[in-house]
Length: 196
Image 1 (cartoon, rainbow, N blue to C red):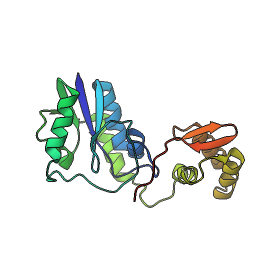
Image 2: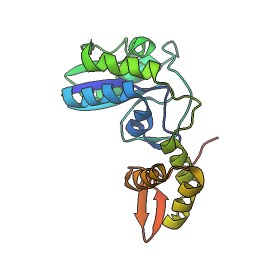
Image 3: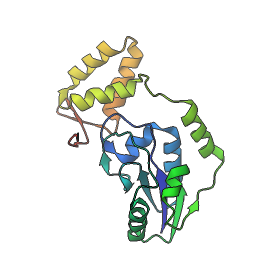
Image 4: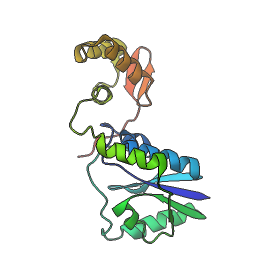
């Protein structure tokens, strides 16, 4: 079994969700994750806060880079990889994340092509501090889970002046993996107690 390890990203969705979805706000993470899924039998994510985790693990947004010198981190990663019983490990990780894998025999994924282009886009196309529609919709849903669809439509009317943007955001959130619609109400799909 080939295990792919993908580094987390600084860009994150604004609400708790599965790790693969949380980090998908980053084009470089998304491209690395898709490449790992295509090349490997199993994929895990190396998180700056949580260590090596399964992609479906629900976690909240955080702001913490990996510290490869953290006592016990490399050993913890090596034990997790060992328990996965992989015959080969492929790293899709840069810099400090690759250093954190120092006790794990691995090869680095081939670079170049679309993977490098996505990394470059991630650096150039930063949305840090800016407002983009899906972020606003997610934050609303997270704090208004259980609201009626009419209340969500009203939020869209008040938030965006452009009619097509309103309709697009309404449809986008309803169909997103974050939302569950039941009996005319919209719910945030991933319940996770907020930690302080």
